[in-house]
Length: 434
Image (tube, rainbow, N blue to C red):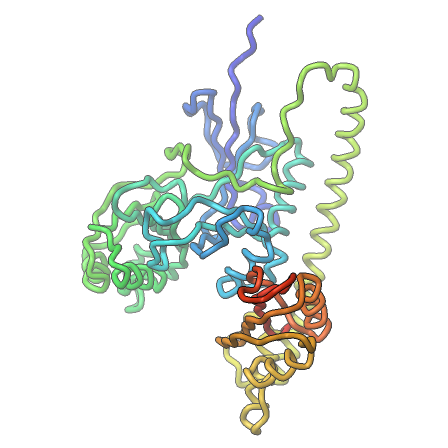
């Protein structure tokens, strides 16, 4: 008897699944990628399938183009996190990074024409998704961002949804944005006649870099429309033609070129080979143990999530009582540190991340046989280029600075030119730990 063709269940997961909603849209495909069934429901109504794929809405994945070392071995999570630190809201250690393809062939959303695409997803988000799906009996083999479902084009492609949207500028370049009020509100505020800030910034950067597309193609999600007046206002602001390109439905986009973001620790297990029949009882027992563990882990995650929310509310309340003049609160500990530094500066004292404070603390840790060659400072980061006795001295200096409360990244090390022996020229970037 011939084996039936493989089927794939593709799940479209919004940011609120599974914490705030249990339903999601799904699509069942055959081995050739043709649609067999589709629907919107809870897990108990999902059809059985041989494979499982996940599609995350665009806002759940950060896509950026940054400069990284050429060698894969040097592209550690620490180096990638340092390159992305200005674009991340939290600690880089809490993010899962996936390195994409070089962006030298196409313009990125920040207007640069060189660099490497990097995807970032919250590690806790991936852990929660995989634990929940495994508890339900699904082992996802692939996870992609909805951003890469937009049709590729020589122009930029833009998708407008009821409350949000996303822009694709190249194979692995783009961004997402909020669209408060939605594009098809009859009596929209005047602000909605302006295109989203992310879109304006992307166009301005591309214009500066000389990489503007000929036009922006607009795809509209089901039930979304944009009136001619608003379209004309956006076009006048951006200085680019906006071309309606029809309806966008994630179910109709194959996404064959989309990058699988399940890598590293989140990579799917390899397909089992033949000869495992004798281990089947042990595998069933292990699967049952995994199911129980996954359910327990998900419950623990939910409890920890509630505790995190409670503690953040306490920090926010304390921040408001200490600084009632603050209007917007995003990261209370970090904002409190910055406002504390501001008060110190207003009283003639340097802040923790000012140049003199950083330099004084760093100088106290420098070993005696060290030659300082270059100092650069920008936005709370001090970068030192210096010559040390050997590689061990570099590591000792980093440990010493870390103990003093600095976040330290060794940007580069190379043999010191014009020096005999094992002398090393190192570039260290440090900032005060918030």
